[in-house]
Length: 71
Image 1 (spheres, one colour):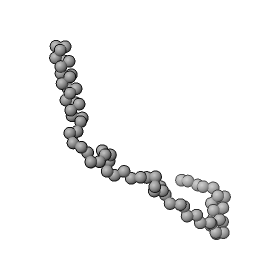
Image 2: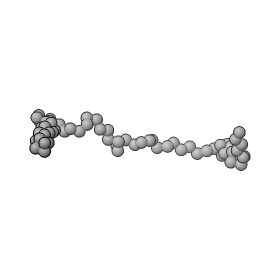
Image 3: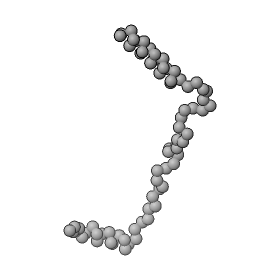
Image 4: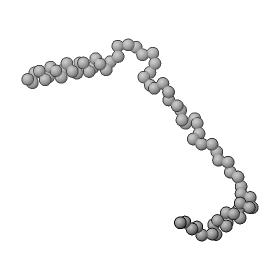
C-alpha cells in the first residue's frame, strides 16, 4: 500500500506540473488589461473659498450666541 501511495503521489505531481505549464508562447504579459493610474488624477478639486460679508458674519455670531434647543 505504501508503494501505491508513493506512485500516485508521483503521478499527481507530474500531472500538476504539466497542468501549470502553458504550451504556447504569449505575445504579452499576463497582467490585467485595464489598470487605471490613480496617481495622475487628483481625488478632488481645490475648494472655492468665499469670504463672508458683514450680514453673514452677523448671522453667524447670532447663531453662536443663542443656545441650541433640541426636542
